[in-house]
Image 1 (cartoon, rainbow over the protein chains, first blue to last red):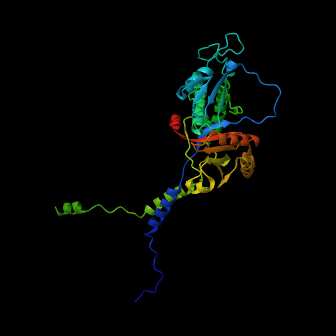
Image 2: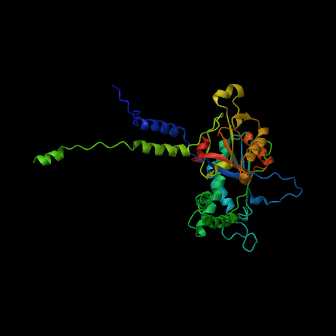
Image 3: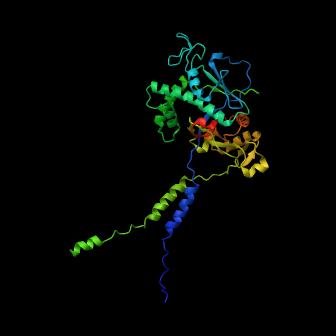
Length: 208
Length: 160
């Protein structure tokens, strides 16, 4: 009765089902995420030096974060939402008078003699308490970086580049960007960074 | 007449599903290649804060991860509720961070060892004290490039 000739063909009808099963498994376990965050450089640990670098007080913008998340900026309480504006005003002040070697010819600030001389001289000093919440700290960091980016983007526009500074940085970090473009971007990024260097100091925090 | 009728009568032929496995396999291979299995299960709560000025951590092979946060419920009995540091898949003290980072850097290929970023994945409810200690440790071992990993979002949402 049974036919002898050859093995019966295996049905491939359920192939799709099996493949679907695997597909769904990989769909569920896949995480196509690239992490992103705020890049920071820590200050290198140097042997203590005798000579102290003397900065003019007006060139330092102090930001202190208290343990309850309140902000003390230049010794005054400040709403965190105004921090960016205030930082931009400080960095872009350009207080040095014409003829001074520190005169800033690209600043658009108020040129108040009480505030920073030149973006190159301006330093932001950030201090926090041990009990400060991390989320507040990140918000402050974000606002300060945003202040720098705002100025840098403005400069990029003024210099007539067709990309903003943040776009150029992103393109520079991207692996797909061709090398020759990267070289060009590097020069431009460097140029803007020299005009508005990011001097964000997190000195050893004072112990209460 | 009858000729016309015959044509009208003809129904749509069923769509062939013979190529369905091929399509599915194609998708399957795509997901198989892009899948990255998580190698360590997070043992700490890890709800990151939001920020807007993000930079992508492009090269995954040049990153060392450090997790900080409150231990998850499973571990709270043994380790308490204070934020802890997680390195790979165990809890660690602050003093072990430096050694861990050096060890991880040594595992990477020679040519990328000088450009390692330390990604700090810190829960937003942690205190700065522990972060400051970690930063101090990182400075000691000269791993100065850090990235505070965050989500993309309005930074003021952190304050709520």
